[in-house]
Image (cartoon, one colour):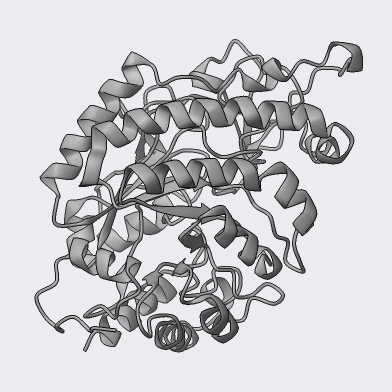
Length: 427
């Protein structure tokens, strides 16, 4: 193994070194590049207040389901973040990032939301959200009173077994539209303007069975199986139906990947393929046999295409205890695991690094958002961050991020302590 010099790496070189399992000059950092490595808009606002003195600045909400705030060039520079990313053209509620308007969170945070971000009061005092902002149809999202993000509203039509058609669960998938392709051309130019940074592209339509997407909060009148419980039951009782969906969805994903690879080329370093969760706090959500039958063949096709046609590394997000599934993820061709939920069963940091550190890049796991960030002291946050860097960053293969998104009610002192520990680790 050849170590790179301790000075002179650009963020893009630092990420490339990390992806190659070589020791970088310092730990590579991502916050804000994806929908699973973000920071809530309320926290981004407070960081700007403290670090940039911008009390009246309105942060853009770039992902309205989880209310994630934009980390722009100025804040990225101050925080010494290495990675930038491109989200799909449409959000989980079908909004697009244009024509921004002012909005205020329940905690008083001023922000900006897209023009089609439309809410009405909910009976509990919270808000109801609508697909594509169309308030004439049933709401597809709900933020409870005093909440910080939305939950999907299940709008399941009665299921007639005799009329079930996999095409109904494929309504949201298909070839990239001319609007999509133009959007991605613009985002390639955005990448190129920031070509010193590491880069990650979220691949649209490649997340098989992602339970956040099954209820289709972006569709005005979803058809098929859209109830969360019913979907999970269907993976056992309607397996052929689910496989038919995955097969066609995978076909579309492969078509679109060929276009995106042609368009982006080596501008992109990482492709985020799926955010489907396979773990609970105590163990896997799915058996190894069921993963092999339902998911692995399609994941392998997607990963093989990317590795054959590009230099991109592939990224799987799966919460919870997935230790027993990690050999399957590797067999499927994934290069990167996120969020590395070390608080879950069998997911101890030292064990993961020892057993899988040569095969997987760990992207996340830097600090526990469920416990330490939310309820710990700044000193506890600081110590955990330093420990995780010492464990995961040895010999490379680690991109620092919290375990999933930093939530809106996280004490700002703990967030500052996290970044202080990051910066101190670089000395």
